[in-house]
Length: 485
Image (cartoon, rainbow, N blue to C red; front, side, top):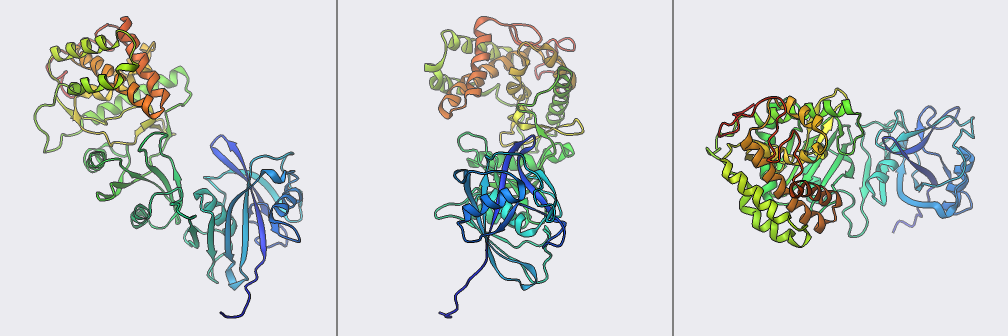
């Protein structure tokens, strides 16, 4: 024991959060005049006086922004033990999240602040006080405590090349990121990770994180649910994906023991749930068709065998057994009839496929280009397998089906149409069972719609009860569906 008590100043910081068009936004003010860090953006903050830290953040919020906050709406965010540059005195900062208040934010202390704005928490402004930026970065990760000790020569302003943030997880928690082994793997690949954001789908075994590097840059870290998916995705990322010239992610690193990969971020916004005009939808689906054609034209791996199975029909009984209590009368008979028709129509040759070509795995770039992510289900199989998950979007929208096949370069043959109907039927049965089990109502509803069309004799996009598309010209009846586009 040294016998010297460690005393430090205590300050409080407001993280006022609202929902914006680009996600959560935080309120920041720009310091001005003869104050510390003049000209830099900072969260409303101040020193704790003879009061609790909650009372302090409520007081400072009113004094600096004019907002009235109820103490009951103050939530603990993160505690940061900080040392300023230049060898200054250490301090402890309490960062609090607030999502409800009364009033409109304004510059209430013009001698200390000359601007106040909302910023997306994923796109914070520069220049910014490094201490505040460290607190917000720690808040985004969910860490309860962080250390931020500057070296004497460090700048006051945030510099992505000067990483002083160290995160401490809570007891028994790995934080929002993966376990330590995967974290170490990611940091060996891209350097120090300043923030992890869990972007997994709300379904079983989905484990994906978006990471931001301390020196800038953004990547995605994925842990596959099994060895098969890891092998497929790494093979695709090393094999056919690079040949598409930036249409998909680039593999940065892979670890088969962890079943983990690091890939580059792909430019664009997810098409899942995007609201578009009719003309925009047609342009997008034409671009998706062109992208599918490029994928299917990729060279086959040297290890590829000559012929592929007719389809995943050997799993029909398993799918029906799992979904039978959930099916409507007549569904099973229609599924069996569709599979029998496909089997009787002849085989299809394999091509390279994405394996899960649907809107949630497609991004629309600012340049209008459509790009893809998530190729863990990529394999050699008939091309119609890539059309199954897009099929539902063509219901009542022959214009989208026409646009897609214009982009693809040709219509389907009768043989391909029969196999597509059978594949949609089986995918629907599987989706109803899996969606019910995993709590995914969208997947269940999509399956029910497809089976209803099959059961009631509804027409398929482009016309024809058998599923043959007529968009763009006469059918090609060659055994392999007309060759590669």
